[in-house]
Image (cartoon, rainbow, N blue to C red; front, side, top):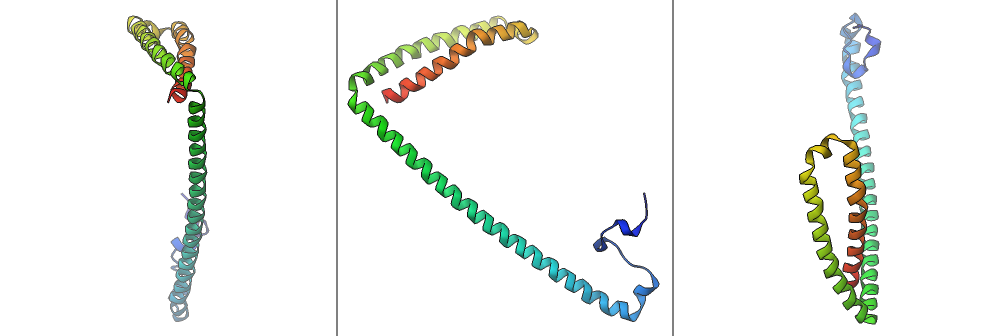
Length: 156
């Protein structure tokens, strides 16, 4: 480790040379330090003020985004309600389809859970078996969930 005094910040160094003990150095040192502390404090206050301004701006943007999102959701809900009112027969059909597919989903999930239980060691040890399992169940589950979500929105 080097003891080079130039490598440390002046804030962390102490001058112990003969000049530091002179009356002139003793008189200027507190004034210099006080001036430096005041300047640093002012800088801190300015930085905090700027941070407060940025936080206020972020809050305003967040408020605007929230209002836009709420408006878009309200508009979407109104459009769906209008569609439901215009197509009551289709809404009833969607409800029936939703009930039927919910039962299909329950059976599908039970078969999938049974297969996982029956082959848990193989799934953990074999990359091929795990990939085969995902290929068989993953796309069907994703598509079925998507269809159920659409029907749920339309059926109300």
